[in-house]
Amino acid sequence: MTNAELEGMVSNYDEERAGRSFSEWAEDVTGIRERRFADGESAEEMAQKAALAAMESAGVDDVDLVLACSFTADRLIPNMACTVADRIGQRGTGGYVLNTACGGFVSGLSTAYAHIKAGMCERVLVVAAEALSKTTSFSDPTTAIIFGDGAGAVVAGADESGGMVSPPYTASEFSDHIALDNTGVFLPTGPETEYVEKTYLKMPGGPRVLRRAITLMEEAALKSLKESPWELSDIDCMVPHQANRRITIGLAERMNVPREKVLDTIAFHGNTSGASIPLAIDAAVRGFPEAGGVSISRGDKLLLTAVGGGYSIAAAALEF
Image 1: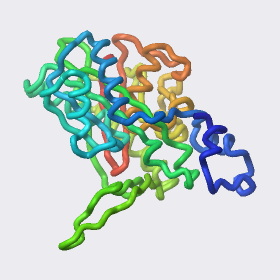
Image 2 (image 1 turned 135 degrees about the horizontal axis):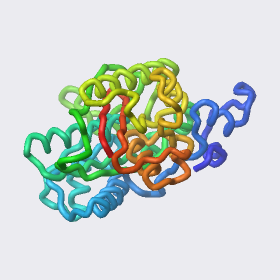
Image 3 (image 1 turned 60 degrees about the vertical axis):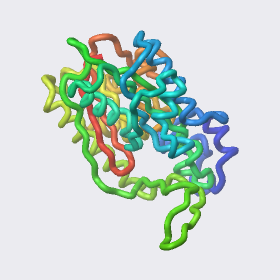
Image 4 (image 1 turned 90 degrees about the vertical axis):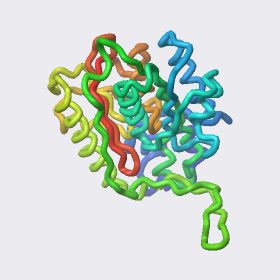
């Protein structure tokens, strides 16, 4: 879905006031040229595909736990972990949903790390999937241009080499600068219940979100590194949540990390929330054009950092 195609879906854009075409404005403000929208496909279905691809890549037939990172599943109950486990032939496998929005994938890695280190699991499937086009109001151009749909997954397991070099870092900070209320549900209002109609993602914070995201991702990345055996100069590739190109550039400049070491795929994927980091890593591993020439190979030292609505904050240092 290119910016030009998206323009046909968006209302309330004032070209005269903006002083440029919709496509130019969208790219200038976000760095996004195109994004993908699922065509009748749910977050659960995208998660299923990503999970099966990850298991095939890992060469495993079974996992001990399914961690589904999402806030856009079609159903609250059965939750996405139950649905995905059933769809990928892991019926009976335990699991649960993590809703840390854009921090979802890294939060999932942190939870997988804890389960494996505690000896509770040998292999954990972490899958992040978001159908954000279903929660986007196309009457609000400022949010409509940002989001895309996608899913990514990994199988985490115990290994003597590589992987996490220290416990991932997680934190939270309350803010309603990014918010999504319950959608289409019955809520108690005393002795009766009230049906709440579908609502959409809201981002009233504007520039404050941008500035705070840069600060929080930097803090998280540095705190994660502090617990690792590495220095920032040791990192081969920094992989931030793909929120907005201005945030990615601001983060790189603030941390003094060369741009060629910072993975930036937002021009092609848009902001896919928790799915953005695995999608970006996959593009760099496979040498896809959207990785912009940044590549990731076995043995590379990666620094992941993300901030999601809430704010939910997470970072991890790992050897690929």
